[in-house]
Image (tube, rainbow, N blue to C red; front, side, top):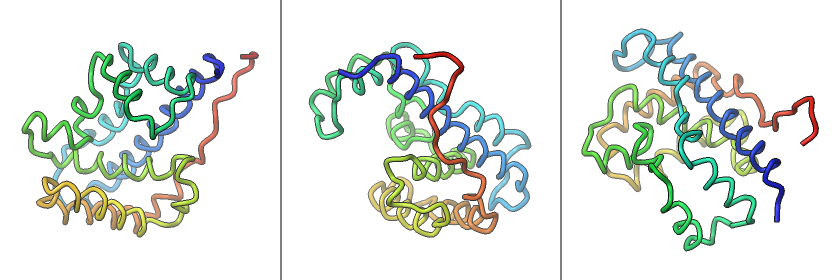
Length: 193
Protein backbone atom coordinates (compact mmCIF):
# COMPACT_ATOMS: atom_id res chain seq x y z
CA UNK A 1 0.00 0.00 0.00
CA UNK A 2 1.31 3.45 -0.93
CA UNK A 3 1.64 6.39 1.44
CA UNK A 4 -1.47 8.62 1.45
CA UNK A 5 0.43 11.87 2.06
CA UNK A 6 2.81 11.18 -0.81
CA UNK A 7 -0.05 10.34 -3.16
CA UNK A 8 -1.94 13.44 -2.05
CA UNK A 9 1.08 15.60 -2.83
CA UNK A 10 1.51 13.84 -6.18
CA UNK A 11 -2.18 14.48 -7.01
CA UNK A 12 -1.88 18.16 -6.10
CA UNK A 13 1.32 18.45 -8.14
CA UNK A 14 -0.17 16.78 -11.23
CA UNK A 15 -3.37 18.82 -11.24
CA UNK A 16 -1.69 22.18 -10.58
CA UNK A 17 1.05 21.48 -13.16
CA UNK A 18 -1.58 20.58 -15.77
CA UNK A 19 -3.71 23.62 -14.87
CA UNK A 20 -0.70 25.95 -15.17
CA UNK A 21 0.04 24.69 -18.66
CA UNK A 22 -3.58 25.14 -19.74
CA UNK A 23 -3.63 28.65 -18.20
CA UNK A 24 -0.34 29.56 -19.92
CA UNK A 25 -1.66 28.37 -23.27
CA UNK A 26 -4.96 30.23 -22.81
CA UNK A 27 -3.03 33.42 -21.95
CA UNK A 28 -0.92 32.91 -25.08
CA UNK A 29 -4.16 32.86 -27.08
CA UNK A 30 -5.39 35.93 -25.19
CA UNK A 31 -2.24 37.82 -26.12
CA UNK A 32 -2.72 36.77 -29.75
CA UNK A 33 -6.52 37.13 -29.78
CA UNK A 34 -6.51 38.97 -33.12
CA UNK A 35 -5.06 35.84 -34.78
CA UNK A 36 -7.93 33.57 -33.73
CA UNK A 37 -10.30 32.39 -36.49
CA UNK A 38 -13.27 33.69 -34.48
CA UNK A 39 -14.17 36.41 -31.99
CA UNK A 40 -13.85 35.97 -28.24
CA UNK A 41 -14.41 38.83 -25.79
CA UNK A 42 -11.26 40.20 -24.22
CA UNK A 43 -10.18 38.47 -20.96
CA UNK A 44 -12.44 35.43 -21.44
CA UNK A 45 -9.53 33.18 -22.42
CA UNK A 46 -7.52 34.22 -19.38
CA UNK A 47 -10.48 33.78 -17.02
CA UNK A 48 -11.27 30.31 -18.35
CA UNK A 49 -7.62 29.29 -18.26
CA UNK A 50 -7.25 30.25 -14.61
CA UNK A 51 -10.40 28.29 -13.67
CA UNK A 52 -9.43 25.16 -15.63
CA UNK A 53 -10.05 21.91 -13.69
CA UNK A 54 -10.51 23.61 -10.31
CA UNK A 55 -13.43 21.23 -9.73
CA UNK A 56 -10.86 18.46 -9.21
CA UNK A 57 -10.36 19.88 -5.71
CA UNK A 58 -14.08 19.96 -4.84
CA UNK A 59 -16.23 17.59 -2.81
CA UNK A 60 -14.86 14.03 -2.77
CA UNK A 61 -13.06 14.08 -6.15
CA UNK A 62 -9.53 14.23 -4.65
CA UNK A 63 -10.25 11.48 -2.10
CA UNK A 64 -11.64 9.07 -4.68
CA UNK A 65 -8.83 9.77 -7.14
CA UNK A 66 -6.08 9.48 -4.52
CA UNK A 67 -7.57 6.21 -3.21
CA UNK A 68 -7.03 4.65 -6.65
CA UNK A 69 -3.31 5.48 -6.46
CA UNK A 70 -2.89 4.54 -2.79
CA UNK A 71 -4.48 1.15 -3.39
CA UNK A 72 -2.50 0.57 -6.60
CA UNK A 73 -5.54 0.35 -8.89
CA UNK A 74 -4.35 0.18 -12.50
CA UNK A 75 -6.03 1.69 -15.58
CA UNK A 76 -7.05 -1.78 -16.80
CA UNK A 77 -9.09 -2.51 -13.61
CA UNK A 78 -12.17 -0.88 -15.12
CA UNK A 79 -14.62 -2.54 -12.71
CA UNK A 80 -12.89 -1.16 -9.60
CA UNK A 81 -12.41 2.27 -11.17
CA UNK A 82 -16.12 2.41 -12.13
CA UNK A 83 -17.14 1.26 -8.64
CA UNK A 84 -15.12 3.99 -6.96
CA UNK A 85 -15.91 6.80 -9.38
CA UNK A 86 -19.64 6.01 -9.05
CA UNK A 87 -19.35 7.57 -5.57
CA UNK A 88 -18.24 10.93 -6.99
CA UNK A 89 -20.64 13.74 -6.15
CA UNK A 90 -20.16 15.23 -9.61
CA UNK A 91 -18.81 14.00 -12.92
CA UNK A 92 -15.86 16.10 -14.13
CA UNK A 93 -16.43 15.27 -17.80
CA UNK A 94 -20.13 16.04 -17.69
CA UNK A 95 -19.70 19.33 -15.82
CA UNK A 96 -16.81 20.97 -17.68
CA UNK A 97 -17.24 22.54 -21.13
CA UNK A 98 -13.75 21.45 -22.22
CA UNK A 99 -15.02 17.84 -22.27
CA UNK A 100 -17.17 16.36 -25.02
CA UNK A 101 -19.45 14.63 -22.49
CA UNK A 102 -20.53 18.03 -21.18
CA UNK A 103 -21.89 18.94 -24.60
CA UNK A 104 -23.43 15.58 -25.50
CA UNK A 105 -25.04 14.99 -22.09
CA UNK A 106 -26.43 18.52 -21.82
CA UNK A 107 -27.11 19.05 -25.55
CA UNK A 108 -25.04 22.26 -25.58
CA UNK A 109 -23.16 23.44 -28.69
CA UNK A 110 -19.44 24.18 -28.43
CA UNK A 111 -18.54 27.82 -27.97
CA UNK A 112 -15.39 29.35 -29.42
CA UNK A 113 -14.05 29.51 -25.87
CA UNK A 114 -14.71 25.78 -25.40
CA UNK A 115 -12.80 25.02 -28.61
CA UNK A 116 -9.77 26.97 -27.36
CA UNK A 117 -9.82 25.28 -23.96
CA UNK A 118 -10.22 21.82 -25.51
CA UNK A 119 -7.07 22.42 -27.60
CA UNK A 120 -5.14 23.73 -24.58
CA UNK A 121 -6.27 20.78 -22.46
CA UNK A 122 -5.23 18.30 -25.16
CA UNK A 123 -1.78 19.89 -25.51
CA UNK A 124 -1.27 19.99 -21.73
CA UNK A 125 -2.43 16.39 -21.38
CA UNK A 126 -0.02 15.29 -24.12
CA UNK A 127 2.86 16.56 -21.96
CA UNK A 128 1.98 14.42 -18.92
CA UNK A 129 4.84 12.17 -17.79
CA UNK A 130 2.99 9.01 -18.86
CA UNK A 131 3.11 10.24 -22.49
CA UNK A 132 6.76 11.40 -22.47
CA UNK A 133 7.78 8.70 -24.97
CA UNK A 134 4.85 9.50 -27.24
CA UNK A 135 5.30 13.24 -27.68
CA UNK A 136 8.39 15.37 -27.80
CA UNK A 137 8.22 18.97 -26.69
CA UNK A 138 8.66 20.07 -30.30
CA UNK A 139 6.05 17.87 -31.90
CA UNK A 140 2.94 20.02 -32.29
CA UNK A 141 2.17 18.37 -35.64
CA UNK A 142 1.86 14.94 -33.99
CA UNK A 143 -0.20 16.37 -31.15
CA UNK A 144 -2.57 17.93 -33.73
CA UNK A 145 -2.73 14.77 -35.88
CA UNK A 146 -3.53 12.61 -32.85
CA UNK A 147 -6.23 15.04 -31.75
CA UNK A 148 -7.82 14.89 -35.20
CA UNK A 149 -7.65 11.10 -35.40
CA UNK A 150 -8.49 10.27 -31.79
CA UNK A 151 -10.93 13.00 -30.83
CA UNK A 152 -12.64 14.19 -34.00
CA UNK A 153 -12.72 10.95 -35.97
CA UNK A 154 -14.16 9.08 -32.97
CA UNK A 155 -16.54 11.86 -31.93
CA UNK A 156 -18.60 12.97 -34.93
CA UNK A 157 -20.10 15.80 -32.86
CA UNK A 158 -16.74 17.60 -33.28
CA UNK A 159 -16.65 17.34 -37.08
CA UNK A 160 -18.39 20.69 -37.58
CA UNK A 161 -15.57 22.34 -35.63
CA UNK A 162 -12.65 20.61 -37.37
CA UNK A 163 -11.40 23.72 -39.18
CA UNK A 164 -11.49 25.75 -35.94
CA UNK A 165 -9.51 23.10 -34.08
CA UNK A 166 -6.96 22.95 -36.90
CA UNK A 167 -6.65 26.75 -36.87
CA UNK A 168 -5.93 26.78 -33.12
CA UNK A 169 -3.33 24.01 -33.36
CA UNK A 170 -1.69 25.77 -36.33
CA UNK A 171 -1.62 29.03 -34.39
CA UNK A 172 0.07 27.28 -31.48
CA UNK A 173 2.59 25.76 -33.87
CA UNK A 174 3.35 29.20 -35.38
CA UNK A 175 3.71 30.70 -31.91
CA UNK A 176 6.06 27.90 -30.83
CA UNK A 177 3.67 27.26 -27.92
CA UNK A 178 5.39 24.11 -26.73
CA UNK A 179 8.39 26.20 -25.68
CA UNK A 180 6.37 27.69 -22.79
CA UNK A 181 5.57 24.30 -21.26
CA UNK A 182 7.45 23.56 -18.08
CA UNK A 183 8.46 19.91 -17.57
CA UNK A 184 6.57 18.06 -14.85
CA UNK A 185 8.13 18.20 -11.42
CA UNK A 186 6.57 17.16 -8.14
CA UNK A 187 6.20 20.07 -5.75
CA UNK A 188 8.82 20.23 -3.04
CA UNK A 189 8.14 21.69 0.36
CA UNK A 190 10.40 22.68 3.23
CA UNK A 191 9.02 20.01 5.51
CA UNK A 192 9.19 16.22 5.59
CA UNK A 193 6.24 14.24 4.40
